[in-house]
Amino acid sequence: TKMAAGIAKGFSTGSCPSYLAQKIHPVLSHAVPRLKFCDIGVNILDEMFAGTYHSKDYHPADRDLLFERAAAFGVDHIICTATTLEESKQTLDFCRSFNSAKVTSDEMRLYSTVGIHPTRCNEISTEVDIISQLDSILADGVSDKTVVAIGECGLDYDRLNFCSKEVQLVGFRKQIDLISKFNLPAFFHNRNTDGDFLKIVTEERHKITAGGVVHSFTGSMEEMLQLTQLGFYIGINGCSLKTDENLLVAKAVPEELLLLETDAPWCGIKPTHASFKHVATKFSTVKKEKFQMGYMVKDRNEPCAIIQVLEVLAAIRSTDTNTLAEQVFTNSQ
Image 1: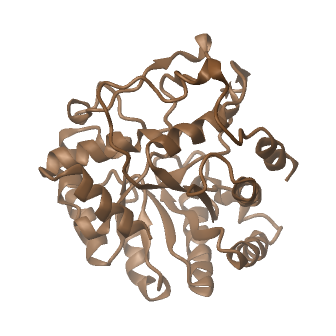
Image 2: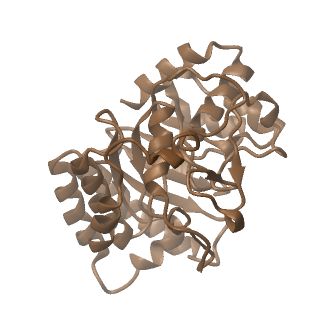
């Protein structure tokens, strides 16, 4: 799309301007070795990265610096998630534009998902055949392996004001049929679903042949164990690490089924979270109202902050960060 192409033109292709040289890599509390990460969930087209918050413009777009910071922390692979039909198209275009521009690092590559978020499933209930359009985008996206998963699909009973339970259930099953047709992994969303999500993925497990991940997991220990017994990966981000109970669940996720994400610009680890005491890497930020190019924005999460998720998990598991990082990166491949 024109939007994705325009963003791609704004990418820096070499070193940063001198006045940014000391700011591009955030001020840290200690030296951090460069590990290797795949952030499995980033909302890359979110308007916050264009400087817009709740429809109000605060600062210029700074996505190019987001990628610089991500590369500095070893985030070489990013899966950009889509939540609507139009966003599926735009995200695929954005990833292709980025990859063809060879921005930031020869190692960095963006991938995309295609799918409809449960709270947006009213799209599927319209007279327009959304599923056939998703099918076309998927066929295009898998041709060059830019599209690597179907989603974000699933159920969300916390926000039924956006889409009814009945419509969500129909949309979820239709997308599982696409998962089966294309033999792609699923990128699942599951919020407070009273067992319905688990019931459906259990019934339909034979169709989900390439497996999947339940992203931004905030469920119970019992639910996590049931999902991992089905062979699904568990995606952990800051929202998965808010409470002491969350930490116990995250600690128990089998290492071979663990994936890391930021869900940026959402789900950062905050000082009020139970996990914060385990964070070693701290970033220097400024409020959006006092934006300075090159600095991270307070309360706007970024892929580089995946290092914090790793640090928390390593601490609660009493595991070496390097070893855990290697295992999780292997899981993502």
